[in-house]
Amino acid sequence: MRLSPAGGVRLAGIDLSQPLSSDQKDAIVAAFVAHQVVVFPEQSLSREQQFAFAANFGEVEAHGAHRPADKAGGKAGDKRYAVAHVMTNLDADGNPTVRLSPAANYHWHTDKPYRARPPLMTLLHAVELPPRGGDTEFANTALAYESLPDETRRRIAGLRAVFRPAFDPSGACADHPLVRTHPDTGRKSLYLGNHATHILGMAQAEGAALLGELLHHATQRDFVYVHRWRIGDLIMWDNRCLLHRAVANYDVLRDRRIMHRSVVRGTAPF
Ligand code: OGA
Ligand code: MN
Image 1 (cartoon, rainbow, N blue to C red):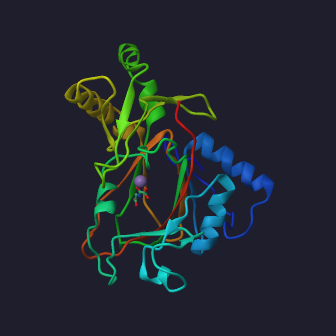
Image 2 (image 1 turned 180 degrees about the horizontal axis):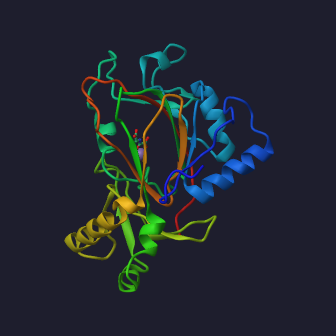
């Protein structure tokens, strides 16, 4: 079932905790490429099972131990586990708080674009949700590119955007084509977002203004699918042709929101 004109499809009736048949896997990949966001309702997965599901689609990033529960079986910090990692608005004592990394998620972004080879896919599984709100929004940057005036498309052809990690401004940056081509579909899309600071070879302010204009264009409501989560939803999205953001439409200092997250590595944008 299609979820919006801007993308998204719902695939019910597949139990992701079990190994996939090759037909199931092909159907999921086809849905992912066609609709950019795939929603699997009513899933009940351990973090290990989520990692194993994600591994059907490429190399999954392993994460160090982040939370006390992770540390029970190994030395904190140096052991990496083949499990989905926990994204939550809770602090170490289980109390809602605003942390830097989730706070950055409230701005339109694509995941880890400051890497030379940014992730192709992110998977999120809703484990605990606020009574209402806590949505995630997705903006289709292929539609955004296709709807630009010819003159703008000519103006931005060949430009490269510079990306830096939000939490570490001194960390390594990468530059990528502002207009990237999807390796599976050949479709062009805008590649930008909160981590994009400027355009290579253009004055800082001019580049930032261009990125701001394009971001404004790309995130207009017609290009956006809003996901209203239900417990058990697992969704996967394509970081190569979408922007996304968490919506702070819940009480982040009172309500609990716990998601399990997996990230699949991609290839260098072109
Ligand atoms: C992410 C992300 C948004 C959300 O996991 O990369 O941006 O709504 N999440 O939690
Ligand atoms: Mn994100």
